[in-house]
Length: 522
Image 1 (cartoon, one colour):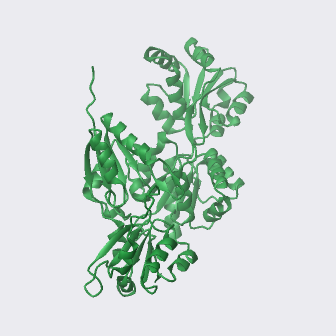
Image 2 (cartoon, rainbow, N blue to C red):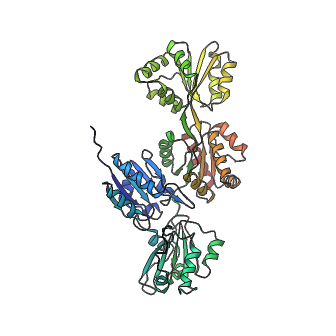
């Protein structure tokens, strides 16, 4: 009987958002994690640094929507630890300051799971500091109170002593209180706080897009509405807010441009690494999903290859190779099929496809110089007359390959071994759209027409389609496309394409984006 030794859960505070405020221990644990259960508050740069090989579970709580309920999060932490995994529960700020870390720790300890807490710098002190507001000052106050802006909704009465807070001369810092700003202000004034008391709202504190709105208890709600203040933001109340103008705001520079990729999970790890090496921070939100597809023609494809009736076999992607071999029942059948393939002329579209074939022991006879179906037809049409050609690819393959080979008098058989679908809309995708609208994105790349259509469909459902297209066309965001079909699809939707490389590879596309941005900044 095999006994699994329980893993350990690390409750890790990621700090307020500036990636340089992440502790060394937090950084190490994130890199070593096998499972990361993360909130949205750590920020794009820290979330983008999560290792591609780790299992990533979005547990973010977004305005009006919770990806997972707290009891679900607790259950996942226990289950993953019992599988013997090294689990990081990644939270914004500090896990034990209004982060429900204490509750999660209790659940884990009671379940017999080892827990280690890694403190993080809380936004309650970091955001005011970056906004030029020391929360204590000898000339103003020696006391500070941290208050949650969101209490447990199941409580009958408020646990916040508004009267004591109103009577105190100390600084009040309210976390997560944007949606309750009006209520909180009314409570303080009702219990005797001077309406002229200075107030600061600090959005996205310590990040490059930090913004501070300063007013008083009397007018801060109106100012917040006028400036459309959004979470995450903290509220600082007290005389120390007056120091904001004198000390000035400290906003970190955006260190590297941000690039959005939307590639499927299979390519995510290599794509992120390539983009980072090119000098980009990466937001990776898969906009397409690769799924196995049952095709009634598959047995015929295998039979033709094994019997030697197939002269040419074409794989248009690495996925085609994987899904073909995975359909075979066992190792002996796969080895027999690969031996038979190597008696055919096997063609791969693109170096990644060729590499995937070589990894499986499949010999590739030809990789067209330009990685497209049209170029392949041009390359082999003189040599296929009377031959049997098998094509293993997705259900969305271009008709030009089959039509072109048939026109050259080949007998063509297509087997659809996988299909490309759109992932279910989730909060992470919605956050990506918000990032694009908020000006956080410097470049975006599209590697298929379906990726374009899925993004447009998503933005249509969120009722921001026209805004997104306008944002992509304002020339601040560089738009890149692999190949003419993808570029043509973008143009169909009125999206201007800045970069479309001659070589239809992701590497070439990123290189072109990099060069285009350099030219723009000269």
